[in-house]
Image (cartoon, rainbow, N blue to C red; front, side):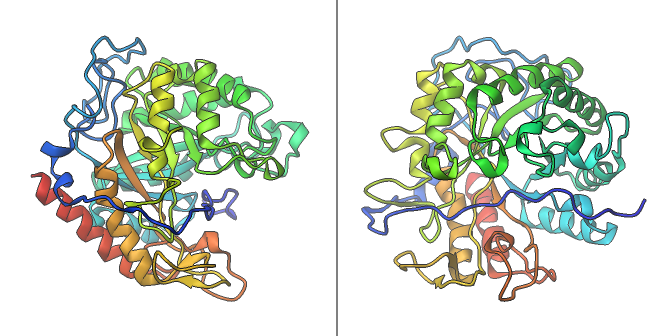
Length: 427
């Protein structure tokens, strides 16, 4: 059937406040080897906690999932692990022509990634009623990826007007659902449809800790309740399902903007027992203009994974999940805006990067992620710019490795080489 205008938008990264002062970069060269790194149990992208019999995405179908606590004391820093890579597409693949979809998946395979992250928008599949399903929109995405040996990470999110919380206005797709059970039923049907096609890994919502993606304002209690019904609904039809927490936006708590920091939101979920519902957490650490490996006295978003006083790993440990894997399901840098472009890490007063700096950030993402034992998978956001470069274009639309017209930016080759180098050193 003919394509409709796009109903959803991809996750929109934000610029982050970081101090330009540096206390040096980590020496990563020797750390890229698997023997030095150690890391996490999963061979591919995820583990559910040390010693857990839960399925990882490489285990195949049929292994029962378990949410019971781990019984071994092996830590993330001593486990063997193979860092994997992905490309985040937001809500773009669903609306591509067959030819453009094929090219996007071919490029992903050439890049050397194993995973593609794409929105499975409830609003796209059931736009008008609870009895209407337009699964064919997503079928072709799954089929195109699986044909090329790529694993799909759907982000189940975004509410149709008929199911939205009326308190936040049905015009916004990021309204949470009025009835969590309806959202869970959609997730259950999605899992039932796509598990036979090889999809067993799911991310539940996107950036629930900021108002732009949870329109009523961040609410850890409400999100925890959504998880509590959605996780068992998926596992009821696919006991092998591997579930990710909705990707946390890396932000400071800013009440005026209705932002809750990733640390605070994760801790609130931990207090509510919500971490028992998922196998891994998801996090979006943008650091530009700094390289991901750069360290500052106050800590960058990458340092906040495991090296600052209130880091994510410490919070997981506090709530009984010290070995829970972390997926970096978005990171990257934009190359176009109306402001000044950063051409180095020391640039002041900038809001986007030059092509050359974006390429350096893409290349550095690989060893920087490999140096963090708890990180199992890292995704670059995004594949392609969402619009041509012009005076009115938005920064959020220019994180691509390729331009809107398809021409590759230097970052494409830089990331491809970094992934290839990592694999060769690992092997």
